Image (tube, rainbow over the protein chains, first blue to last red):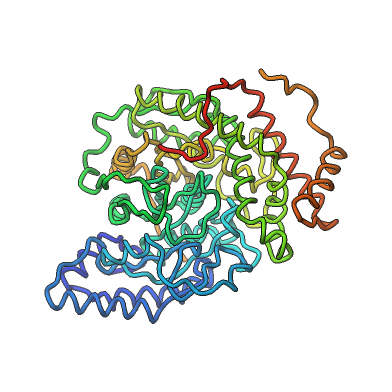
Length: 463
Length: 68
């Protein structure tokens, strides 16, 4: 088995039948990380001893005839804002490195390992997740495996980079305003941002409680669904997590897009980006035979409201650190957070009131359609260090504007599968497959149909 | 539209606000940080004004705890 291109499904098939040991999978994975990570800088921590011990324990259980889990032997890694027992949860910062080590793994790490997956390390990210670039002043930028001088996207940059580089078939990230969907687009991977409240955030470092989501990255839709299914379920340790029972998706994928009403988002989502961002959407729509258009109500204002709430809640979270350790922040993050601390309360409340109205209007759209397609980013991955991008002929700051198309969607917690589109020999682009709340199955089915048609794919970079 | 139609505050006004707000918040804004803080505050102000220009019903509840 070529571990660099093996899917999680391939690995499970081999490990569960004992054709390959979990120890061999982990040994091979660790060797590949050692060889390739210096180029992409995706990993900040590798937990080799622990991973080998976990693998040996799994092999012993399988040898005794115990059942294999749905993710038996699948190596995975997590954005370093997830708690990993024995490590301080750095969340991309310098400041958090002095925190006491986590006393247990984050809830989703525990759930994946309960299904047989094996944690191999922590992944690079933009400081405190306030980032769309994947750059990090403390750990260095995570790099785009398909063009090493280009951004991985952020803030889950290491997650996109590790999966696209073939270091692991599965990674976890977080998405507050686009931090799963942006690196998925830039690195050419699949990513799932589930409905707000679907997956527990217990044991992860927060950013903006109103919008924080966790979710998986993978190179195959089946892997995304298998990981997602293993992570669902209520958790009283995260008050935002739903008490709904899991809605398992893996068995539904091959229904494809049959019977689903799909439309392309027009208006705001059809301007303000490079032509190729919209060509990517057209390519996906064309593959599905979609011609219908819908308008998402006041999306520009929704993005603005998300911007205000993010700055304010982020600043609230970090206020003490801004007082006591301002010099230890990434300057780009610190200066945004200081500005955020100064936002009048009435602005935030107005943004939250607008959010209620926007939610009602957008949810009404789902009476008419099941799935909406929109670009993930307004451009392909810029170069690392690039400060500005040109959108519709206007030069704007790169850092906040890479998320113009993702922010209005996470603002009301809609589930999205980000699918990777390759228009030519250049870098990939992403398309958001957006569904109604709690209908991750619809988005995953459409993504699976696109994968089957060859319209989207997540190749491992040649490194 | 709401009555928030006057010009966006200029840099001098925003700078004065930063200088007044920082001690209220217990924050120090070093001189070399101030230009970027001002740029970010300007961007936030523009976003907040766009939101406020949309008229909202008095009965509309905020959504700080969102239920999808």
